[in-house]
Length: 168
Image 1 (cartoon, one colour):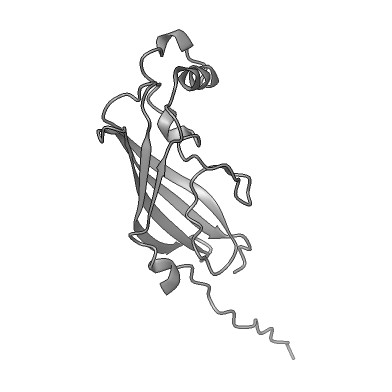
Image 2 (cartoon, rainbow, N blue to C red):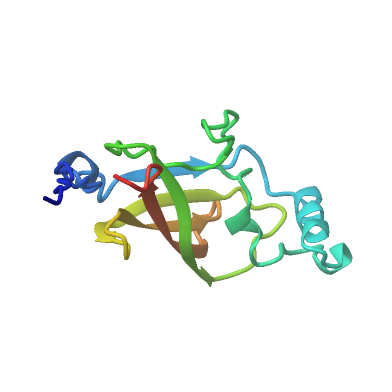
C-alpha cells in the first residue's frame, strides 16, 4: 500500500495584529539641529554627480528626501540605518523593503533653512505574495517645513515588511 504523507497544519502568520493596526495615525517629528548649509548642499550635489556651482542658493530637489541629517539622530538602528524608523511591533522578524515614494516639492530648500520633518502613518494593510507570504504595507506621509512654517515639500512613502523566514 502507498504511504500518505500528512503535512503538519501550520497556522498562517498575520503581520497586521491589533498592536500593529494601532499605529495608524502615529506621528514622529524631527527638527534638524542646524541650518541645511551650503556645505551640505555642495556635498550632496557632488554625491549625485551634479555641478555643485549650480546649487549655491538652493538645494537639489531630492536632498531633503535622501538625507538623514535632518533627523538629528546620532544612534544607528540594528541594521545600521541612521534615519527615521517606525519600530513597529511586528510579530515576527521582518525585512523592510522600500515600496516607493511620491515626492511633491513646493519650493527649493535653501542653505539657511532649519527643516522640520513631520511624519504620520496614514495606512497599514496586509496583502499576500504569490506564495501566500504575508506582506505588511505601511503608508506614511512626511511634510518638510522651514522654521517660518512654510512647507518646502512632502513625501508619501510606502514600506513593505516581509517575514525573514519565507516559510512562515
